[in-house]
Length: 115
Image (tube, rainbow, N blue to C red; front, side):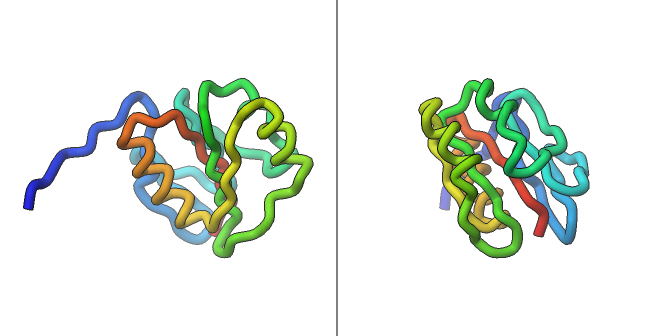
């Protein structure tokens, strides 16, 4: 078996998560977080779309918590109208998917609600 070391650009991978927190790039963040190519910051939930609208990304993975849930149209539609893909999934799955695509050099972001 051949093993390849994964290297990331300036964007940080999700290292772990647990009840009410996420560890991104070795740093722990409590509550909902927004993971962008430019850094990690607290996320205000579905009413907070401004940072995503201005980000240089192609798709945002929305972690809806422990279980998959529908993303409100008031959040999804403005992002889709701006040409962004919006993919909702449970937060653990969103973290894994984000890390894989980030390792491939894709322009992705994460909006995560805690598990």
